[in-house]
Image (cartoon, rainbow, N blue to C red; front, top):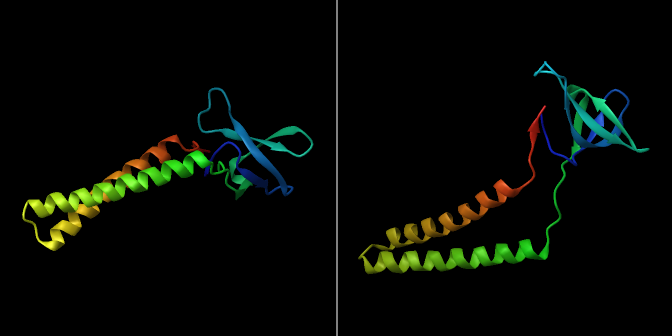
Length: 127
C-alpha cells in the first residue's frame, strides 16, 4: 500500500479514523514497519499496514498560481503546435504530417509540464 503524509485512514480493528503522520520501522528488521496515525484526542497510534484502509487521499488545494501556470503552459503548447504545423508546411509536408507535427509539439510541452507536477507532488511511501 502506498501512503502519503496527511492521508486519512481507518483502522479496521476498532474503526477509528486518523491521519498518517509517519512510518516507524523496527531497528534491525527491514520488513517490519508500522504506520503512525494521529487519532482524535491528540494521540498518535502505531498501526500495522494491513489493518489500515485508505478513506481519502491528501491533496493540496489548487491555488491561483497553479491555475495561472496551467494557463501559461496551455498557451505555450498551443503556440508550439501552431509553429510545428507551420514548419512542417514550409518543409513541404502533407496535411496529415502537419497535423502530427503540431500534435507532437503540443504533447511535448504538456508532457514536460505533467512531469514537473508529478515530481513536485506529494511523496508516497510503500508500507
